[in-house]
Amino acid sequence: MRILKKYTALILSIMTAIAIFAGCGSEEKPDTTAAVDKASLPEDVQQIVDRGVLKVGVKNITKGFGYEDPATGEYSGLEISLAKELGKYLGVDVEFTPVTAATRTALLDSGDIDCVLATFTITDERKKSWDFTTPYYTDHVSVLVENSSGIKKLTDLKDKTVGVSSGSTSAKSLVEAMVKAGIIPADAYDAATFDPATWTTGVKFKQYDDYPSISTALSAGEVDAFCVDKSILAIYNTEGRSYIEEEFAPQDYGIATKKGSGLSKVCEELVQKWLQDGTISKYEAENGLK
Ligand code: GLU
Image (cartoon, rainbow, N blue to C red; front, top):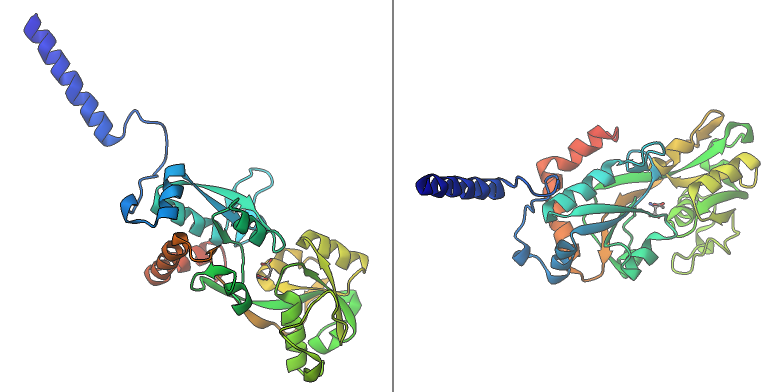
């Protein structure tokens, strides 16, 4: 009897060891095994690993990039998939915070989010304040109008009012394109001092906090046109509306992180890897971006 007890105890402890080794019996936590050794990570990234959650700022109304299904609350898009890859690499969960062009930098600065994957265009000006990875996608700016306006080309925008998002590259991109096309005199424009709020030469701007508001303003005739990256404009290109002929100003999207942070380095290494190993191409195709 004592021998039997001894054997039972032995078998039980072997089974427990196997269960622990195989990860059985632990809480359901799908595939959060880090692909990287925590000790090899920069200190700020180790803190994210300890916290167990990577906080990512994403768009929630930009189909193909960052979109939250209103019915299910589920996020999808290229930027969502890349954020999940980043979480998987670190072995942490990913928490999405919806951001706009107007809110994303303040949320990053305050530490409410660790990084931004939100159609965030890399510019020299922005690089002074935040780190950006190598681009993972390149879009262009265009302009959406009501067909009834008769606006078809860049030249037709002369002296019109254009709706743009605050904190975006759109107004500057449009003015530069109009200067290039000879619609606005080159000597009237200075990139260093340009401000959409006060600009009145050849075109005027109204700034909004979000894109649905610009779309509503376009329908109401409050603005003559809606200007931003084509990827963002897509869901507003509804019946009775069209893009003008031109698209301009390449917009390179990068992951933005706090300047000088260890996370910047990790993101850069991963983007380089994803560009090379086909991860980005795969997610582009999955999201209809090719
Ligand atoms: N991509 C542009 C920018 O970064 C448009 C704004 C936006 O992403 O919402 O300024």
